[in-house]
Image (cartoon, rainbow, N blue to C red; front, side, top):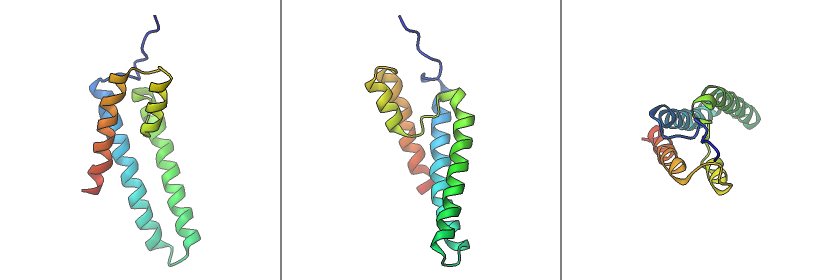
Length: 109
């Protein structure tokens, strides 16, 4: 029988990592968009470049930091695909998905 990877668990560290990762990513997307628009002075290309760079760097950092703890499945589709391929059990996919939803809404409040 295949042993579950420690990355796919419902430990508090895993759940907290998924919540914080999603929260930081959403806050970065919103914040960098606002900041890039203000700093670009009407130049859409500069705003897009600034926004893209900020999002890419933060996403890379989150993946590097959270991958050992939770697998860094900041996108629920990644977890859904892994569940469909039977690489992760349903109960191990539901709890992090719920926390990702909370992490998505929290920066908007």
